[in-house]
Length: 112
Image 1: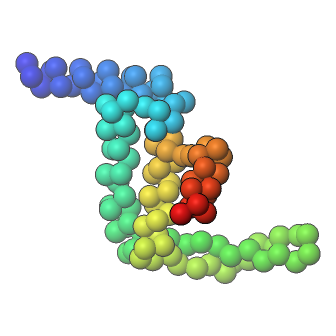
Image 2 (image 1 turned 45 degrees about the vertical axis):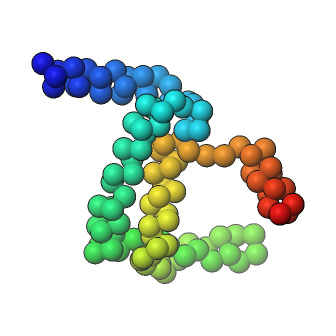
């Protein structure tokens, strides 16, 4: 019986999440934030996969106003790869800051 209740709660949270997905992470209540943190679970597994297989970032060259696509690439490893994966998952969580919040943070840093 408890398992059924837990499953129903998770289904309700998931449906509620789909309806309210336009809300930012910061504006969500604690239950929604906890539910959105599920995206973080995949980061270590993705990191291990890309450390083995390799995460290719292709390098484009700019010649004047035109961008030339090349077959050159750089393999991301370590903390750079981790930070990209975290940023990707935060995008899925709708975790972003408004320009007003960024400017206020910059002003507070200057005042310190």
